[in-house]
Image 1 (spheres, rainbow, N blue to C red):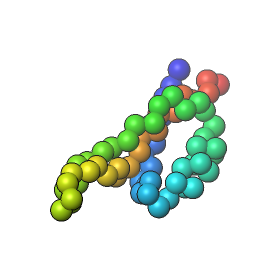
Image 2: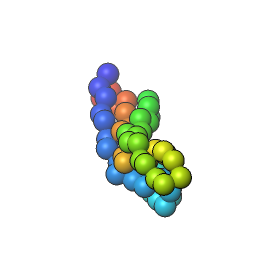
Image 3: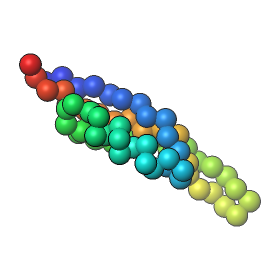
Image 4: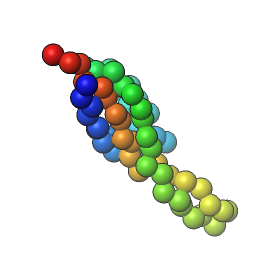
Length: 62
C-alpha cells in the first residue's frame, strides 16, 4: 500500500465548492482530511481559521 498526502489551500468560508471537484478528481481512496487550524483573535473574542487541508489518499496498487 502506498499513500499520498495532498495539501489544498482553501478558505472554507468562501471556497467550499473547490473541495468537491478536488476530491472527485482523486484516483485512490480518501483516508483522512486533516484541517490546519490557527487561532484568530477578534475584538469580540477568539475564533479559529482553517489555513489549508491535508488530504491523505490511499493509492491504488498496480
